[in-house]
Every structure is written in structure tokens, then in C-alpha cells.
Image (tube, rainbow, N blue to C red; front, side):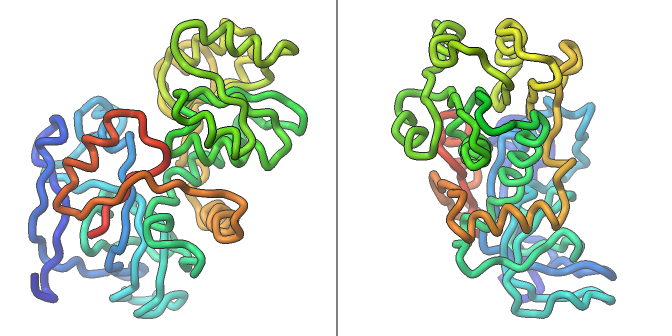
Length: 310
């Protein structure tokens, strides 16, 4: 690869992970207000699977050939006209809204970047945006108060690990729905483990005999129906994934979009830099192994984040 070329993940049609491939592309050029970033780390997320498969084509259609990825952290290597808050050589983290971060280089608006705290490793910084801002939005959607009980599905996943820690920091009693393999981690981070599967409703009731005040769904529509059946008020049931079911039931469905700004991203980066929140890194993969990264993610039993290292 020369200095005039970059490499990027592409897919030319909807499909499973086998439609993904890595290609050489011309080095992106920043327009006015943009920053060219040499990407050091970029997270993979379940939403990207839904976009690539076509499951969300009505909401988020792809234009082929399509790039992929939103999380990113890296080093500034070029500036567009008018950018004064960053300099070449600065370490930054942020996000792309043009599905372009799964690459060696990408251009993003300066307004979508913040300085990378020195305390954050590249994998943590490169996977912070989606989980951090989505968790922030989900927690704020149910307005948890100290002493309340909040249940969280997929509590040991990428977003779930952050949601659990945000809730615990607010003095909330957290019921973390996850596999037995995650029981110790949840206990260490302030949550009561509740195993998913058969008897879940009874297990939740037993863990919270005085009732559950709110429910955050990070997995699928069956959890929204469960929350309604448990008698939790509709305005205190939130999902980041089951949009159609939320519309049908009248529950909330706030995602990272409502929290996609520098203020929230800086707040979450500050929490991680200070050690108040941990972002577990489950695995890292080179860019060329993007299919393998998604194969692991699709198992849906990963604690924390999977990250590409271009």
C-alpha cells in the first residue's frame, strides 16, 4: 500500500458475512470541516450485521458498494479547510455516520471527534462510541432512581456491560440477565445475575420480590413482551434493538442517535479514563479477518467488545 492508497471493508450486495471483503481504495481526502484519520482501532457491532444482511434496509438502506463501521480511534493525518481544533498527529476517537470506519483511513467531520484520553487503549477508544452513547441513552430513557430495581437483558454484551455499570453507579439494584459464565463478572460490577432461558420470569420475580421498576432490553422482542407481562410501566421499558415491537407495545426505543454528540462521548470517555467504567475487550482481529470477527460476534455470547485493528 502506498501513501496514496488506503484499505477498507466493502460489501457489494446484501448477505451474510461472506459478502465482506477488503479492497484497496484511493486515500480519502478531507473536505472543509473534515479530518482524515489513520484508524488504529474500530469496533464491530450487531447493528452492522442487520444493515449488511438487509434486515434494516427500510430504515438504513445500503448503497453499493458499501463501506461499514462507525466506531473509530486513530491519529489525525490530514485536515480540511477550517479545522482548527485538531492538528496532524493528534490522537482522537469518535464516529462515522457514513459507514466508513472499518478501514485503514477514513474522513469524518471534526465535530464527530474528541481527543483520545491517554488512559484509553486503542481497542477501548476505538469501540467506545456505539456502546458508550447507546448505554447512556438507554439508561437515561428509563430515568433510574437510587434504590430502584432495573432488569437488563444481554447484560454481559457490548452495550450491556456499560449499562450495568452506569446503573450501578447511580445506586440502582441491577438484575443482569446473562449466561452462567458471566455471573462472576456481573457480581463484581454491581449486578445480581439472573440466568436467561426457561423460568426467567419466575427467576426475575424471585430476585425482586418487591417488583421491578424498569427494564432495558438489549437483545430481542421477547424481552419487551416479558417486561410488559411483569407489569413494568410502558414508559420505563426501553429497547435499543426491537423497534417494531416497541412501536406495537408502546414502549421506548431510544438508541445512540439521541446521544451522538461530543458532550456525551466526552462524558463516557471520562468515565472510562477515570476507571469508573470498564469496557471489556473480548477479542481483536486484523482488518483482513473481518469475517472471522463477525463470526464470533454472531455467536451472541461475547462479553464486551470485538475490535478490528487495521
